[in-house]
Length: 525
Image (cartoon, rainbow, N blue to C red; front, side, top):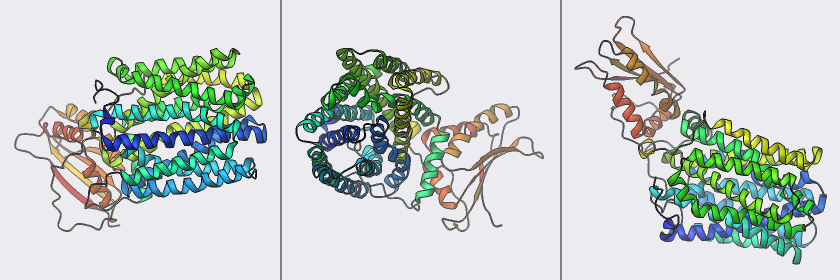
């Protein structure tokens, strides 16, 4: 992946530039809505827990719906999925505006409609995130994702600040109307620059449940993706304390809604400034080294927020916290997208959302409850300790970006010599590949064969094993099982160039004149 190109180079693509600008407006509208809903909840109820639940209502749907939404984005029309979700969100935001303008909304109605908007956002985000980079060459994806992160975090700076000013002068209803307008703008952008259609395939489309299992299986057996998901989950669970408790911090400072908006604005501004140098940081330092620094910085910000009462120092700390948050999250996001092959990219994005925002949503509720029961300082200091403890994950779950050959799908080199092809749903299917190897190479052969376990199971196998022929000691058989014939065809199509290289290494052990022999079996009883 390119780390030397300017972070602004993706904006040379007109389609990406248009989607980026409209997406930035959409982010601003959503940021305004979330900020005002949280402050309105504080005014209506006076509870830190209920105010923190607004963040949960926004992001918990990501945990529940993101993966099914990712399956739909990988297997159906992404434009249709995005459009339907935006229309539903527009209706919910409009209803929220009407209730606020008429002073008819209570805590329950506000929380419910924010939750509905969160569900719409969860349904459209995997499709939008995986398609917005379509106009950009793959080598510029880190820059494109960084630019999107800058827009998102600039919205976090601009949105809450504008929302605080509008809320003070005009009330919550007019802020919610801005969200309606920005949602309509996002819908128009999707209509004008639609996502690329999926390439045609003769394989049967995956169903929702099977596609969900495929995505989970891929993540579990891909060490690159699994490491990123574990790390982002730990980071989001601890870091959610600062975001969720900002209304309480602002209330303690006595600055009101405008002060709350300024705290959010400082975090967003710090994130934007970090985005300007993110590319140069990735060019000079490893991903793990950068994330270690951001963990330390964010833990210090949490500590300062608990112990310091000087407003200007808190505002500076928020800027540093926003910079650390944006830097780490953009690294997790770009590494996840760039490490997943096309067939599962939306699901990888969805799993990133599940890990990050699911932990964020549950963490927000948890830290809000801790603040109500044990006090704000206890909650912030406990979160700082948990953030620092995340450094223990660096060694067992190292971060890296997948190489091109690890995400490029290859053409299978074994033909399917079968008399009659089964129905797609028929199965289970057992596949055996036999090897007669050179004498004295058994241990090296088995070590090489073991490296095929993860790719086979990652792409669809539910069982994998290597057997030695007791009658012919030089003969070994690799055996794996998939649930159906359709799953097997999908598995073959998902193999990457890296997987094919592993198979080539295995075939290098064959005795002279021998070839690998593949046999297929279907369960009858």
